[in-house]
Length: 228
Image: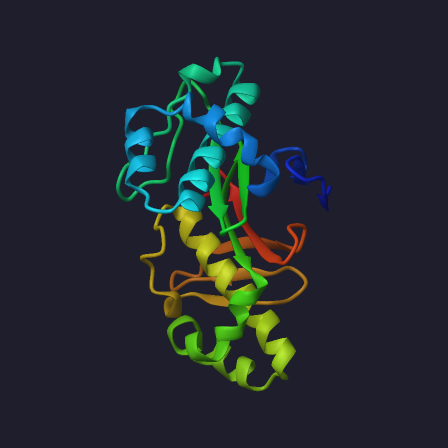
């Protein structure tokens, strides 16, 4: 059973207790920014220094600190021993010693962090306001079938359809470690009771959408880690 428990900066999503998603609002945790800097490694500190705007420095540092704290709590390791590895073409990892997979998505105001041991998961968080550009972006995101559906909808329904498709495709690519390099027009969303995405090879991944984060659309793409 999928269920959502809306608690700011707490667990907001749980799937059979094997996928957990946490929500972080930057303004409510602004006082954690300087504390979080003490837990950044050299590359993370360099990245923070390279960011121009304070809001970007804050969102990266607080989100990374929170991620490390969650991983430390789940794995039993010391927070100082958690190192996040980011290799090109692969999903970020905390290493074999940690044994917990994760994925992160953020907007200008909020972050969501998933953790799981038994599921491959990708997550995307988009502000609802992004849908105001849905008509302009439709050609670069939708398949022909999706465009037919999109143009048949009323204005508000178009926005909802756009957000569901966009977040699902982002989450799918992040699940597989593609980032956003995959051509979204190669991915087709089937929006029904058992929502799934279909790729050229007909592989299937299940989805869950939520509005648990205020003024955002969140999508989780998931499948058992060792599914053939």
